Length: 410
Image 1 (tube, one colour):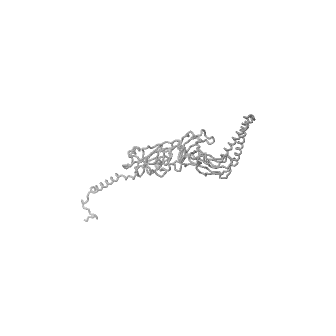
Image 2 (cartoon, helix red, strand yellow):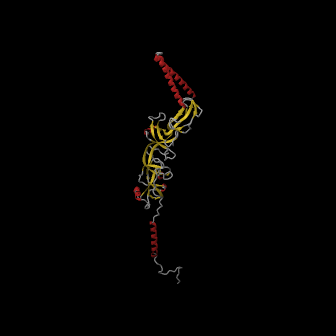
Image 3 (cartoon, one colour):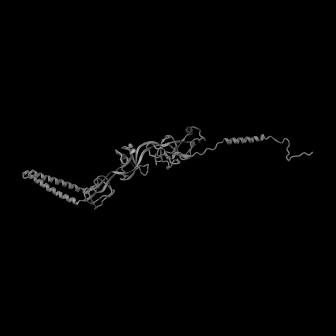
């Protein structure tokens, strides 16, 4: 009997158990899986930022007005008599002294009248002396003597007046200053009262400011007034309020205020159009750079650089992922700001002088994220001009509510 055979011949006892062979492989795979599950992803590279402390600045509560400078002493010169201009030894813009000759009139007619009055005065004086002698001798009455004496006195006074009129031919500068526009030239005939020129003293000027009636209770003598120059950080001039009108203008409902400015360096000019800032109040407040402000949902925030422990305390929870050691942590805090002034925002609430602010990459930051200071902590100048002015990170420039009485920047 033939037994069928299979293609694969297996001898009894040739199979070994698989468990001892698979055990090392399974253990190795298990260790590999365990190692993969316990490893953490590498921490992200912290963003580089600049750090700065808030510093105090003077916050100004003020209002701006357009006005025109006026010389306090400006004298318009005219002749009190008619005549022809024979000399004019000055030119427009010349600096003159008191008593310096400005122009001369040829007064031929007036001189003839003076000569006639002088002759009349001599004749009447002789008649008066003769009648006084005759009265003493009893030849004439006292009434006749008094008539001729009175006549002599009248003619003498008339001569004095004519001589005074003749002195008007020389017109001199009454004050020190600069010669204004010359309205006539040599050879012109002028009438009494016609203005020939003016002398302007620019050493002291004032501006007239029309303050709205609702601000009239805040105005008082002595308030500072600043004239703005091309550089907002360098005022053109500073003066004081010297006059406050006792009543408002009935038609405009404004209060007239005058402020005086000393112009020793001659930088100001009569009739110059200026922008005047009337300062109602000044106070010292903390300020932060414009670049440190983040605008979100219409509210203003800043990022503070704090230690890991302080960050956990402020957040009230553990930070995940764990911050990098030896690096500060950024914490976002809300702040209340005033009006932007020279690249800095006055801080009304939210931070203290001891806080450290983060500048740069604000849109990439979040609370609990480690930051890498790019350089040593910056020491901003008084104007907080750390870099060219840029809008705060976010949708637009942050404009916190102004302090009471402050203007919102446009």
